[in-house]
Length: 409
Image: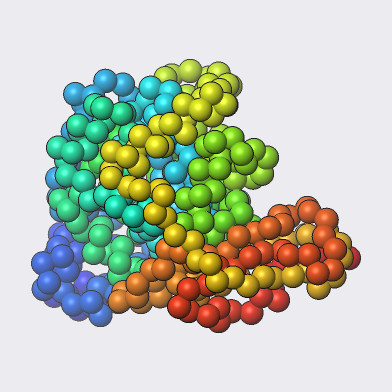
């Protein structure tokens, strides 16, 4: 039966709800083996899925666990998800901004996929930070400070946790149907009223082309309509790393710098303000322009940073114990000129080789390592200038630096 289902999808045929339910729930219950599910995931990655299959798979994911209900919390609950990119720590910035403006934020985040880091991995670089809150704890924290960033509860879409981990190590992370079902099942089961999706496209993202990004955008909106949720999308560039920091502790520190108003003028900051404005617009039913003014003001007056501190304190994190490796190397300019390009994919490969993420299921993450970009695209540099600082732990970098920076001489 299982082989018949795998072979049917291998031949590009449409699977029924019952067939999808049999194999996916069979995997969750241990009756379908890793190599069998990997074969199906690859067949889906190659041949795609119809809307009917995707709606069915999303339902199977949702029905694998509990559906949270936060209707007792006043206000529109707006959730945001990013498809992931190199240096993408936007959640750490925009969630406190939005919550500081009176909109409840319940963010159930995931771990990294491939070269892209996950919000939970970043938060775990803050010693003590609890990423496994129970439903009652989430509700109380929402009532107290209007913001929660946690991992999925054990009972929330357990199917996705299992499939997510397998996708990460089987080269099936870029499948648009699997991305859509994964994201939307978690957002719907997690109690969101409205959903904003930041779709990354480029060399440092799961999706490589604008056509794929548009396809995923349209699919997300169709799933939202099917489940009666308003979904908005923003397609953003990921050919260049997002911000200066790549690596867990480094990215937390960069997010803090933005919230404190110390980092004000780069693509990362602009994207954070754009996403936050969209969420505030959805949550308050106001224009994006009016929302933007409120976003800028809450960073200026310090309320957004204070909300971040409240979040960390409530989830028992201690920022004073966060570690960044003291062992460093530098990448220096080989010529004078203007930086034309910083290759996000090559930066991601270098970061992964340091231990910022997992290459196999059994790997452990080193939160103290990573890369800091001392120079950004458009900066003028002289020969010998430090372009980037590499923070090294137990693993020596195993990727060449030569193809990361392109300098116009």
